[in-house]
Image (cartoon, rainbow, N blue to C red; front, side, top):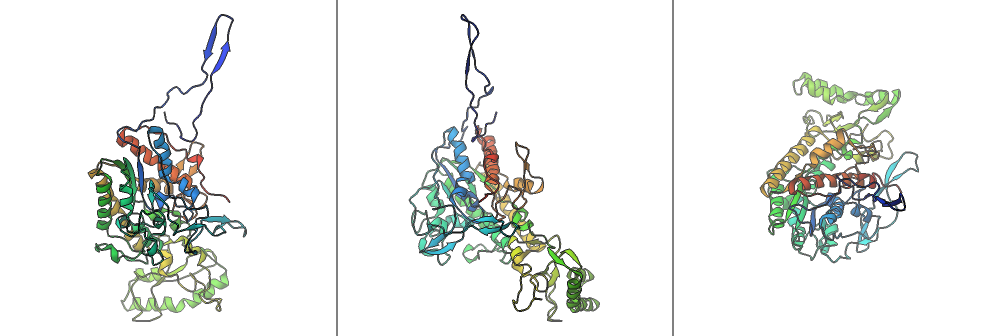
Length: 500
């Protein structure tokens, strides 16, 4: 019988006297099947977690104390403690604001909260200046080695925690706070602890930067030199696989057991699903005005179709039309359309969005603003098309999904090669996004932005409740792989949304 770690119930014993000669001890309600928690063939005495923001407990666009305490590794460590697990140390931020400075200059923003002042809930940074100073380094070692922003190969990179490199973007500000030295590596600091058990969840950032930028980066598949990658590029699958292989070689060298997690399909998270493709309200007069303005563009497309330059299908895809109503599609630039500017410079790669396009979450603050403050007709997303950074097109989504599939195939193979447990986070978060997860109180956790309970306000990282659900996925795999018996985490003990 499972017991929730945070809500263990204890029942007292009641002594009833039935007669002067006969005393019966009534034990009252008891657990008919008490659980003896065990580590099975695993050893949790020294547990180390490696990864990026998902391991650190990042949520609501920041790293802060409450979020770090609600990280899935910290939850696991609490469960492991019931089966021989040791202490679990965390490189805590200085406060719950999440912001940080370098030499007194702010370089990291505060966490998001919902602002109701306008009557329509809007995510805004919490007010105040964070007191975390990056150059105030901490003394380790630390069991939670998650560093937000880390790609797979960053865990192997010397100097990734060098404070002197943070300002130039050559080092990670989070890792710089707790690296053992300026030339240290995350893997080296993790290995130095002689872990008996470890978790590794890495690789999502290798594709997430590209997706969050609306596909503005480069798909580096075929390029095996990560030193040439940009922050918004997709990492070559062989680079990701090689990095994870090197991490596992090191972490298992002393016989440690562990669990890997694969990479979720990032296009299913609220950051890509919260903003509809058709959020533009128009009255009839404005719709007529826009249709007249786009008449020359539509006519130019039809002319080139008649000349056999483009197909009827592409003309239909590119034709722009508005109508009176609340659900007009935005206009966007699509680099995968045929370049017609050599025939007519006005025929740029422009079309309206469809249901297949994913508008990034941050586009909601840009759509409807003016490209030229002096021109009230220069409305972004309507009269002025959205640039590539605001939309993940179907072709760009395919690049993301192809890379994700390749990463996950490599991760599954490495888990088998090193005889480690594998958590299928990809499948689980797809379930959260499609059907939701029903909790013991009958409520359902979904991927609906702000109200679903599964994700934080940044639309990418889980909420504390979402992390609790993921922790239970890790526990289930650990139990199956190593014959352990561990207390589950109660997701209802963790919030689905911080309320300030």
